[in-house]
Image (tube, rainbow, N blue to C red; front, top):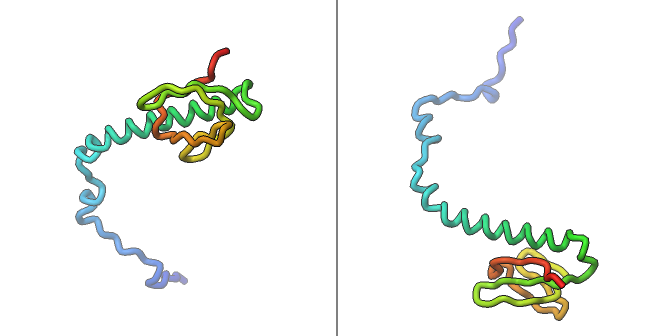
Length: 106
C-alpha cells in the first residue's frame, strides 16, 4: 500500500533561470570596499575601547589618551555605550570621531 503525499507538500522545481538568482556583479563589492574599510577601523577602535575597560588598570575609572580627528586629549573615562565614551566629568565623546585610544602611561 503506497501512500502519496498530498499536493500541499510537493514543491515545484524550477531549474530554468537558476543562475540569474545567484549571479551578482563585482562592481558592488568594489564600491563597498571603502565603506568596509571604514567599518573595520571603527571595529578596531571599539575593540581597543573594550581592551581598555578589560585591562587590569581599570577599576571604575581610567586615564586614557584619545586621538580625535582634530586634536589629542587626555580624559578619565568611566564607561561607554554604542555611540559614546563617557568621562568622569560626564562628558560624552563620540566614538565615530576617535582615531586612536590608549591607556595613559604615568
